Image (cartoon, rainbow, N blue to C red):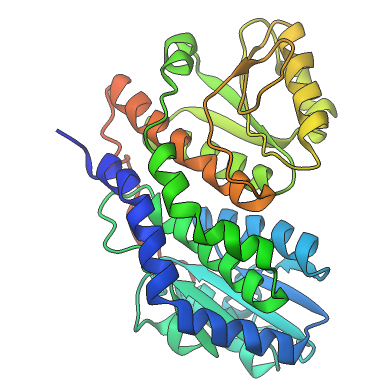
Length: 340
């Protein structure tokens, strides 16, 4: 019998289709507003898995729209009572529930400070949606498992669709339109070889670069949430500046590599760690020493990076159960965390 988490992973293709059809008008309107505003820079407002989604969108916006993006700590408004000068900016808030008081407080402050505000939420109406100029329903549907899967995926996808509308990027739009079909393949991919090799490992690294670094961060969080296993995410460049000292024989490393400009350098790091004796896996072809994990190529660097999380979710759900945990009910965690 499937866990809630496994069922929700299987629903990702359908949830993606639902978003692209059900929120198309809201995405067009928000994209047109961004073109009219022509923001000098953007800020993101989020926590947890939603912050990983925002981190992905940071890289996507900087690469496609050429605008700098900064993550702003929600406590700036909720705890410290400060505001920023944002009349030339746009702000994107990401929250599955749309209820966290600190996220809502900063989104409201950004709007009052002159920013064009967009929210990506799975709950409408919600306080965050009401605080935003352009609330976008990510249409993920009910998510019962504590660990976010389809809501994370649809948050990123909604952001990518927004970027495509804003920048009028036809190539990205075409890739997004074809993504649900690719996702049907991705949910069926099997990472059993990785499960067999991890054995009794107690710690591991997740690597990525650019948008795939956000995927690595989300993957590390899911190991902690569902299996109480220590996992850290690093840029494939930064891991060589200190953290590599912990990588010894059979230390597990999972490298999330998209078909993008960083692929060669990321693959080189994964191979180098394998040569040191690490248990090194990579979502790419052509590695010399690192071992290949199955992936789906989507035809665009950004959707390619996003699709990497889908087979990982399937793996980590099965890994959690194999370790005797219930991935639907991680210890000491709640579905909605309302920080102030």
